[in-house]
Amino acid sequence: MELVDFLRQTQAEVRSEISDRLGEPDNAYPYPESVFAEVVMKHMSEIGMTFDPEVCHYTARVNNAILRISGFAFSDETDQLDLFVSLYDGVDDVTPIPDMQTKTAAEQCLRFLAKCAQGRLAATMDQSNDAYGLALIIQESYAKLDQIRIYVLTDKQAKAKNFKTREVNGKTIKLEVMDIERLHRHWSEGKPRDELVVNFEEVAGGALPCVYIPGDMDEYDYALTIFPGEALRFVYEKYGARLLEANVRSFLSMTGKINRGIRDTLKDDPQRFMAYNNGIVVIADELNLGRTSDGGPGILSLKGMQIVNGGQTTASIYFTKKRNPEINLRRVRIPAKGIILKSNDPVKEETLISDISKYANSQNSVRQSDFSANKPFHVEVEKLASTTYCPDGVGRWFYERATGSFNTMLARDGTTPAKLRSLKQAIPPARKIIKTDLAKSLNAWDQLPDAVRFGSQRNFMSFMVRINGEGGSDLPVSQPDVLEFKKMIAKAILFKAVQKLVRPMFSIFQANVATYTVSLLANRLGDRLDLEKIWLKQDISLRLKEQIQVWAPEVNKVLHETSGGRMISEWAKKPECWVAVRKASYSPVATDIPEMC
Image (tube, rainbow, N blue to C red; front, side):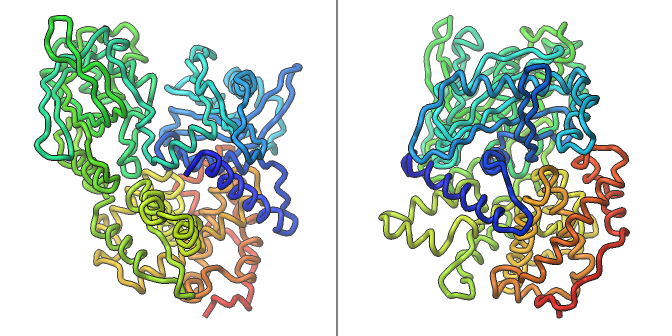
């Protein structure tokens, strides 16, 4: 798909979303840039560039300076923060945007951050303001933040994709631009690693010595090398979590916690690090060979570099140095095994990467549930989605087991405009469900909203533990059949419907309200709700929507009243939060909901 076509498709999605929200009674949605921001932030979360995002539209003038923010995302440990600011014009042709405009937006977001960090914003804000909770948590947690990034989101084409880092109260802030061109690259290729090019002459002062072995098969070549500690730290500082696990991002969680053994070795015996550490496993799309200073073979650069094992080692080196600047990483060496990918089949490549991650030796063991794309459950759901037709006998759902497989399918099977159009009619993007979203739908229905609100990654791991029959799970370990598949899709339809209804009702923390509302529906109506009727209609009834619109504000009220001043997104992660929501009183259930039996 060409860039201009992608732009128009994105605009159609945004406008459709705005139209739907404006169509809801008393639910005007006045900020189109927030809808665009939500679309982009969700994608960035899916590809591992950010954490679970929240929309938060805030604009204010403080002391003649404009402060702006469109959304935010905290890591699970609240030690990493991404802020987003949206520049949306609704253009239908690829249009350049001056760097000065994106830089100004970044500066406005930077001012918001600075005011929060200094404690000067929350103190002057009305506590009912949507951004008050965010300002307060930034103020309280700023000292322990290890990474802060600001992203400018725009539907235009920017020349500069990043700006010079800035310092705010002793913290380094990265400024990046996610424009329509960069977004198109990610969505069309499904491989964010393509942007990562590491030049070792720049980061290590020269080529890395290596043993290079061309592969006998067409899947990969092989290289062994040694990373200088300072070079690995620098690469992580530049690319952050994007360097780690991009292709198993739905199964792994990077918290930034320091491994004590690694920390102690870096402090006390840096020269023994290579002897003690099992090293890292790196994949790349391209390798450029050259010569080291002594004339031996060496790696000059890697394109699409990813660390699929050893993420804990890499992050621990970075954070240990950040917290202990006196540590000298120049004496640290990390052994590395490199796999240079050669396959042109994205699905085959995804499977290989998952298997490499699964079987490679790593210093910290990785649970089997972390590498689940190829688990029988997901393979079976994918098969069921491809063979089970909707009640109209034409449409189907698409289960995105492997990241980017939906776009791969469109490119593979939509070989002509007519075929592509027919394919999109049968399987529109609205009927695509990724594995982490399915896990959210099912966990929310099973009344585990606190697990869902821990974010896509940890919720997915929790879900995998349950379907693997561990931890006293009440879920069946056997593989799903057609009937079970239809029930799962019905729960996903309900979850999506609640999200759509809740979004325009609240300008912040909509995801928390939606998740808890789904769990409340399951708690109050679960044994009386006929999921088959939802499958047959591929939607929920007007009366059920009205019930949701009654309960959602009541759920929101309970969340705020029981939070004890904590940020709602943090309170929602506590089991005690679900206890409070579940025990609260709500308006009576309507008696004429068609799905009830």
